[in-house]
Length: 225
Image (cartoon, rainbow, N blue to C red; front, side, top):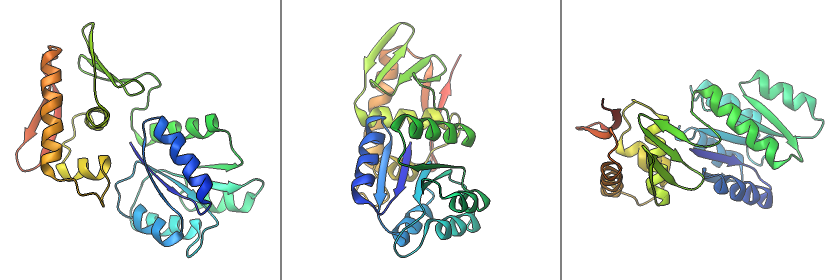
């Protein structure tokens, strides 16, 4: 899952990025309001951590704009301790939650999981399940019927994306944006290589789960009987 951090305190943004990456989230961080708005409007993120006091455009203005443009991505506002008017303004304009600075890592991660659950994503503590497979995103292990093997990070991220989208078709463009970022040099063949790797590993585990190609559209998981 991909998270956008919009925070002008560079050290705090870097610290948050490292914390989230250790939890196997993909993270982008920007440090001013205009960049925050541009990234948020891309629609590629599963959640946004949005500071209120930003240069160029404040967080409330960003929130108003993305909601007016139909972007429904969950937003957690980062507010100064005791700034009740900021909290009220954020919630009134479509924020999903807020965290007051300074905050504990545990509280922030719990609020992120809660916001993603409300969005409808599957965010279990131990792993993701689909059909007869279970993916542990913490140790990158894929298990099926008592057998397991270790995935590399991109394989795990790609399978996680397919599993959280359940039986929705995911295009190659969506995969590139989610896993590599919209400004990356990754191409369709990068996706095809990792899809091939995953198919071989599912076959090795004798799983009934298949990654089906929907020609001209993308890929979808299917659990056959």
